[in-house]
Amino acid sequence: MECVRNYSILRPRYERRILVLLAIVCCWPVLAARAESCSTAEDIPAPTKTALEQAARQFFQSAAAGDVAALRSNAVASLAADFSGVEAAVTQNQASLQGGQSTVSSVFLLDAAGSGNAPIPRAEFYCGIFNSPERTTFIIPNLPPGRYAVVVQNVSGGKAPLFLTTVLNEQGGAWKLAGLTIKPQRLGDRDADYYLAKAREAKSRGQSLIAWLDYLQGWDLMGPVNFMYTAKRDKIADEMQQSKPADLPTQQNPLQLSAGGKTYAVTQMFPEVVDMQGRKDLYLIVKYQATTDVENTAQTFAANTDLIRAVVTRYPELRTAFDGVVARAVAPTGRDYGTMLAMKDVR
Image (cartoon, rainbow, N blue to C red; front, side, top):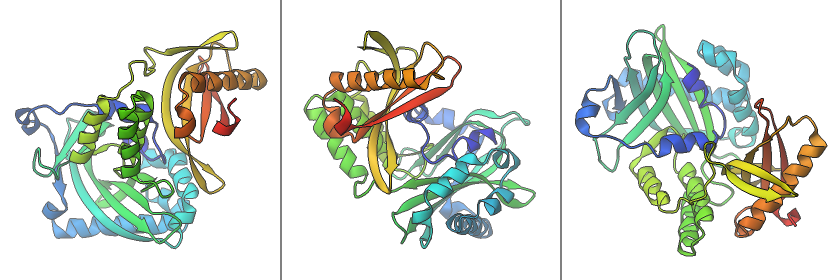
């Protein structure tokens, strides 16, 4: 269950999202030959649907009570072995889970027959009528063969409305927890439509980076999990491609920025929500390649601060689009060290 475990963290990294977001669906004859299949709520046998909804509600109740031990005891072995992502999601969202009421909004039954016991490199599940406005697609890499379900619940009545999504795996006639994702339905009073409107405004002004980042945030808020694709999300994915900056950094083609007499190879930039004492602020995360280890924190802090200034100098429009910037120096060993600056402190 390694693949599903990767989706249990609260907010998966954007670099992972975009790799799948930009995937292109091929033609119907190819789909018909696939081993994976999906049933929507209308097609799932009533006893199975009832069992799935009951299991999902029980997992919500455990999460709302902060009972991480109960969740872990009912998880598949691979998820239970590394439960830190689920625990963080439950802990960070307690204010919205406690006192909240859940409503099941959608149920999908996924059958991944596979071949033998080898994980399926790219399991694709097409749910509903192909190419219809109501279609839903799930794309999950390295999925072990088996029978799964995805149950999405809307949580309201707490501090903020949430999506709570459980991935279930049938084992021994019981539905075990294989993944848990908790996502806000909006950031403060800002929903997906707000960020999409901002993206289009930035696009009209020729601010491609701001447009791209706002499109990302809007796309993210449009769905409960980031391995679930709908016709609306696909449309936004196509639209945002028109605003993709020519100098958007990647691991293979870093953006070179000079600051403090040094050159920094920036590999990733993406928006992330930061909880600042109960206030949800939007920060830009900037990752770059550190040429040495990051154990000298004073030296790395200074480098991070220089890079933050360089990024904002290159893209001054960031000042009005974000509450701050986080620079993360990533050492060759994979260790990283981050520095956060509120935008008002970037001078």
